[in-house]
Structures are given as C-alpha cells and as structure tokens.
Length: 305
Image (cartoon, rainbow, N blue to C red):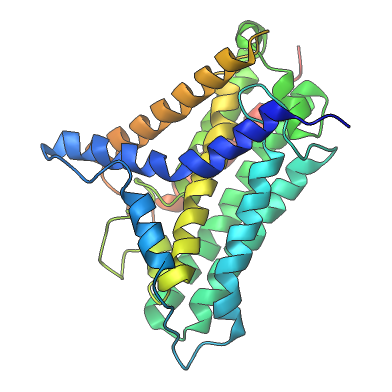
C-alpha cells in the first residue's frame, strides 16, 4: 500500500485553508461597502481565542448539547476525507461514498437541531424548526444532483464521478453538468447559511436560521461549530468546483492550483452576492429550494450521450 502524498496535501489544505475562505468573503463585502474590513485571518484568531476559553452551559441543557459540537465537527471532518479535490481521488474512496456524504451532512444537521432544542430557548427552537423545514427540500435536491452525476458517469463513488470529468467534458455533457452544477450551487448557499437564504452577520433572532441555533454555544464548543462550518463550506465548494473547473492533467500541481483558484473565486462570488443581493423572505426560501430540486431532477432525467 503506497502513501497517497497528493491526497494528503489536498486534505491538509482543506483543514488549513477552510477558515481563510471566510476572510476572503468578508474582505469582498468590505470592498463593496467602502470599508477596510476585518483581517483575512480573523476566523483563525476567533477559533484560537475561543479554544483558550471555558464553555458555559445552561442548567437546562443535557449531555446532548455538550456532545453535539464534537459530533458535528467529526461528521464534517470525515466528509473532507471522502470528497475528491482538483481531479484527484479522495483519501477514503469507495463505492457508495456519495450516500455516506449525504448522511454525514444529515447527521451534523440532526445534532445541530437537537442541540438547539436542548437549550429550551424559543429563539433557538425557531431556528431549529426552519433548519428542519429547509432540509426537507435541500437534502433531496443535493442527493439527486449527485445521483445525476453518478448516472452520467456510471459510478456511485465521488472519486469515480469526478475523475470522469475534464474540461473537454463540457462540450459533450454540458446539459447535465450545467443543471447539476446550478443545483449544487444553490445547495451550497443554503447549507452554508449564506445570503440570499440566511445572513451570517444578522443579529435579529426572529430572522436568523443557523446563527440563532448556536447562540448558547461558547468557548471550545463554539470554536468547533465555527471550524465545522468552514470545513463544510470547503467540502460543498469542492463539489461545485469539481464540476465547473474539472482540471485533469499530467501535472498534479497545475490541477491543485486551478482548484485553489476556483475555491478563491467561489469565495469572491459569495462576497459579491452578499453585497448586491438582498436576503430572501423566509417564505421565499422554499421556492428557491424547489428550483434547485427541479434542476436536479432535470439533470437526472438527461440521458448520458
């Protein structure tokens, strides 16, 4: 058994650079607002500072609230290992790993909701209710988008699916790739609680979704939540970039560079969207998710040419 050095580098980059993407987003938003903005490494500072503090727990909470941050971070960390990056296979690649990816995200969401409900807070309960409602449409759309790519490539492994794509694939398979990429992009914004679905910088509990569910978390628990959110951003972004920029060449370093530039461009896109697009009303979010589901269904219906 040989050591997959390139795969290890990709995983190391994921665990290292994931929080940096949030710094890029904040800088882009600051540019549009005419401000200097926070440092690019601000999330690193926040996580490091929170790890040095102690956690405070309400007497209402149980062991579920204390275990949830560790379980959430662990689930997302495992997903980092099974997603291919830059045209290179994942470290943990096997048949059916795309199903495991969907279930890992489902597990993380389940404990997000449980932890929010465990606090007994009405505000966090509202956030948990909205998260559960939106996941009913988000999860089928995400799974169908991956199923469409699986049907196109005749593989049920993420590494097998993404190794099939190249820049030349767009000239032949552009209908399925376009529809699947569009669906994944919508799910990317929904799962990461970004505008137009949710505003990560809002302080209005009545309109918050993700942020309101972590109001009672503090210290290392909050650090785990923030780092887990950054890793999830990276994983879902990699799935989108793997379709849009499927760099596959004889030079692994070139493929890695294209992938990193794609991740940076995606972060800039998120910052631009959050700067020029208003947050949707909560009643409009299911319509956006229904659109993503329709795109995924159309992608699945197309036959492989």
